[in-house]
Amino acid sequence: MFFYRAIRNKFTQWLIHEPPPIGVLPYDFSRLKYELRPGDVIIIEGRSRVSTIIRTITQSPWTHAALYIGRLIDFEDEELQNTLKQHINVTKDNTRLIIEGMMDQGNVLSPLSLYRHHHIRICRPIGITPSDMNLVIKYAIKAIGQPYSMRHLLDLTRFVLPWSILPRRWGSSLFRTSTGEPESGICSSLIAEAFASVQFPILPFIKSDPEEGFEVFQRNPHLYAPKDFDYSPYFEIIKYPLFNPDEPLPYYRRLPWTKSGMIHQDHGVFSGPEETDKKHR
Image 1 (cartoon, rainbow, N blue to C red):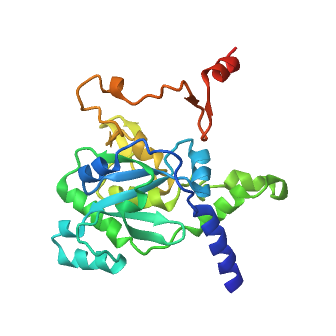
Image 2: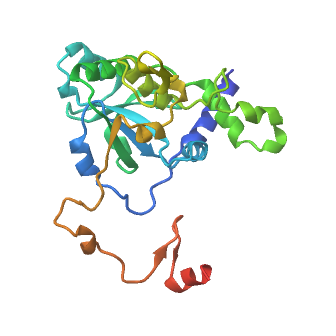
């Protein structure tokens, strides 16, 4: 059992290891953090191996999701304050906090600053009442400490192993529930469950109904991926680009565009205009 745990922990750490960022991030973290509201969903573009797998599966750059719950000083309920203090060691009561599902820790309370060097985006639930928003946050707080889905970890293991040594039938059940539907990680399912607790929609199934016109069904929370909060018409997408578009127009004319003529080809590769022309001939 000890040997199994050691191997599992090594593999988990290998999957979640985050290399340092390359270049300058395309958004303004300082502006974003001051505009966050409790209940906003943060979607994150990860750089780890598991992020690469999730990106491949979901065909989206957004590989992780977290729920912003505010600061300790924002909570008037002393019981909730004390519960949060048990799960995180912060020296300041104005530290901005998120709840997230982590592969190596389960559902945890983390400082927002943990993702200061990641590309992140705000997804804000449209029209939700303050009372329901409080219930969503309380639901997520009660889930702190729950473990990560080991089924999902096993699927990730099978995904990275060479297919030549695995039975072909294994591929058909990867990242799927017992019903055969796709399954996502716990980071998204926790948030989906919290919003479902107050019947707030994310991407519900809508069926025509002869009497009501249509009928709305909640989707299984395990079917959600981080990208679904981006796609959902019930969440407002809020971006804070590195260059503030609210400045006097045309702001893009004043950007510090390079005079070298070099073109970025992704993956840290630059090329000159001559090389680019050759490729398109």
